[in-house]
Structure formats: C-alpha cells, structure tokens
Length: 355
Image 1 (cartoon, rainbow, N blue to C red):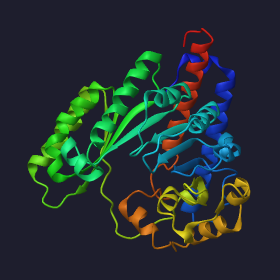
Image 2: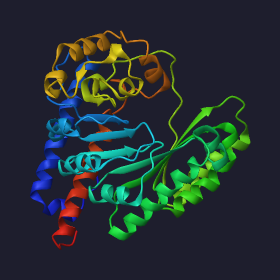
Image 3: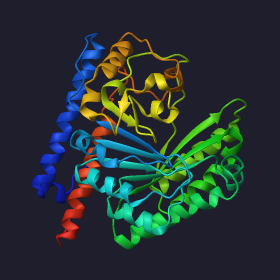
Image 4: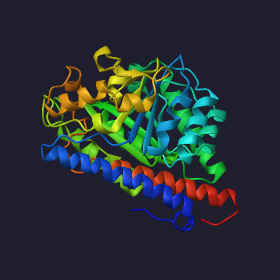
C-alpha cells in the first residue's frame, strides 16, 4: 500500500489510519462468516456512506457521528443546482476523519469558487459522467450544451489543483458508451489527459453488434491511457441475470436520499423505493438505525438470498458487492489510505513542513 514520509511522521494521522484499517478487518470477519454460512453481527459502524442531494437539503451534520467509523463517503448530486457551502464543509469534516470523499456532480454547474472550496476541503475524487465519447452523443442524451458544462468542470478542476499545488481531488471520468461511440474513445482519452484526468471508467451499455473495429478502439484507448498515466477501468460484464450471493452492502453501507430517507445501499437511495427505507436522517439517530430491526431483518433476508425485486438490477448488473467476491474491503482500504495521506500532506504543507 502507498506510504509517504508525511504520513509516517504524523503520529495522529497514522493512528487514525490504523483505526480505519481495524474497521476494515471487522468487515472482513463479517464476510468470512458469511462465506462459512454463519450469521454474523454487523460491524459497529458503517464503512461506506452514500448521500444523494437534490433541491431540498437536509442537515448534513447529521452524518457527523458516522464519520469516525467510515472509510468512504460518496456524494451524488441529482439535479442541476449549484451545491451550497454546507457540502464543502461536510467534505472537510469527513476528510479530517480520514474519510475518502467522492463527488459525482451529475448535471450540476460547479463554478470556480465551488470547485476551489472542494479543493481546500480535501475532496478525494471528483467524477464527471459522460453519456458518450463525443460532444454530439453526450448532448443527445444529457441535453444541449451539457458537454461544455462537463468540460468546464474538468478544466476548472485542473486549474485549481495546479494553482493550489495539490494532488487532490483526483479528476475522474465515467463514460457510458454504446458500441457506435467507441471509435471516438481514443481521441477522448487524449483530450482528458490534457485536463489532468487520471482515472477513466468505461461501461459499454450496448454490446449487440460489437465489431472488431470497436474492440480495437477500446484496446487502443487502454494503451493510450496507460501511456498517458491514466488508470483505465472497464468493468466486466455481469455473469448472472439474477441476484446471487449475500449482499455485503447490508453489512457495510448507509445511504441517504435527497429527502433524508435512509436506505441500506446507494441504489435504494437513488431509486427511492419505499420497501428499502429503514429510517429518516433528521428524526432518527443514525446508530439506532444501523443497529435497528429494519436493517437487521434486511441482513437476514440477504443471507437467505431473499431480495426485493429492485436488487436484481444491481446484483444482476454486476454492481453488487457480494460475499463471494475476491476482496470486498480492498477498495475501502485503498480509499482510507489515500485520505489519510492527503490529510498528512496537507497538514505538513500548511505547517510549512516538507512532505
């Protein structure tokens, strides 16, 4: 795992990292019990937090009690409103607790001052989503002019990172492409490298009729990305049409939708399915919800492979985190390592030290 002198020299940050890794160990023990067919108790606190924010914003400070036990916080904006300062404040509090925060702005407009606030708050990753590998295709799906909006976010983020002399947040792009878009992919990789993007994820949403030409374009894009220092990820196609395995999210995740309703996973929050709801963030104590009867019943149903109908979309699509996956906590360990490294580097930088 990555190490830096600033992290090694900061005893407080190093102790924080150790606590996070112990929490990951606890989830690993849960996964081990699931593999053995035993019924484990849930960890003391959720490791993964997810927040979907829209026009109505609940009190984001209600998440604060969960931050010390969390490794990652994913925030998705589900409308085109500019986020207020309370979101950057939450990002800062989370980052100070060694939580790696990812922001997916969706269609939201992020002016330079907002992006600058996220840089100061030590946002871990900013992921721009594209509905194709070209402006024509993206605007056809997302709406006229949306490609330019997305590109301004990437350009501004690049400028703010350079101006601040920092490596965070990681500029990331996720492309949802049909096979006819793939010929434009190599050119997109070059353009993204020009604005500092270091991570590209591709999901091909339509593979029927995929020809050798498109496959060559994907391979060429992967090679280009490697040459340009960009991580390139192409998720594997799902290997099943129905849910299989125990969903680990029930034992690891805590999600809140734009209305403040609590769900056991991100897809529940995004889809706002009533049967998934387990509480309300403004009225309920988050730990009481985490340890409560509704979530516990969901964990028992997951172990019996009895899922609500909506779970088929996630697990069957290959997005679910299952107990039989190779290393369910690997991403969380990497995330909290990076968050703690960034915290140590920023502490040294602000104090005049040399990382």
